[in-house]
Image (tube, rainbow, N blue to C red; front, top):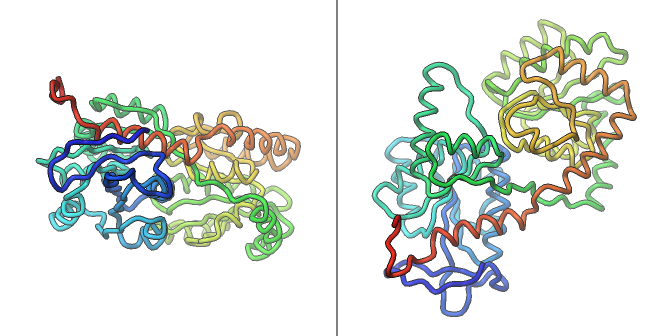
Length: 400
């Protein structure tokens, strides 16, 4: 993206070259100012915003991240060079007013997720500031709540200047909701450190397995918040079949959420080989120690666990939902969504077939090499920003 001098009203800033050295804008120009808006943020969207922020700042773009305080503590947007404005995940007037103030001198606002986009559209009401929206997941609901979600999606899709979908089904969904411009987005997993980091993880493998009580039994790993639509009931149903295996595999679920109490009671009442280990900051080490990774079916377009499993060469069994097929291709065992018998059969078959596991590992390595890099992601986003913030020719008004 090349630098352009823009005629702007006082207080606005000029465009920035994506090739500006050392994070500085070209001489005589001020950097583009963007505001990134997150709600509670799934792990995938929060990691994406952290990575995107780092890349934008490195290219001379000023970035403000509006997100709950706990999200900044977890993902350290300020450490990536952004300003952080704490905005709760609410739609009340105070939260919208805080967001409106944060966006006061923005050249462009980029919201991630449906609820963040809705708040951003409210905050920008009456202002001619471009709004980019990235849809990372497809919300799941039933009955009246599903109808409400459709209304909200239509409002967001029609308000946004551009909707970026992290999978083809999300792009189609945005178009069906009335988006004037919907595109497939390059969403990259942050680059793995490799080398010494991989060797370190391998050294920690025996320790991690000992801590979890799986020295002499298979370790199955799932990660995700303990709430509805994450598929944890399907997982627990599937473990019944694993109890007949010798040795009995242990399923470890990392994450917290409102269903923890109910899930723990079920585990104890039914004697299921499952451990809930809460929220962890060493998921990479735990995953590297696992024999299989399980993704039971949250409709996320690019599930973080799926990406990390393929990078870590851990065979993946996943429900065929959302954009998972686009993401993993033939590098995972895909089973019907909500089918515990199929999930149990796939896991049992893989544990008994080390050759098949090695084949999946190799396919995973090749598949991961096809995914967009962080540079690809930043370049695409900057290209979109450039389109939306370049000046209109004097003889042509917007929309004509």
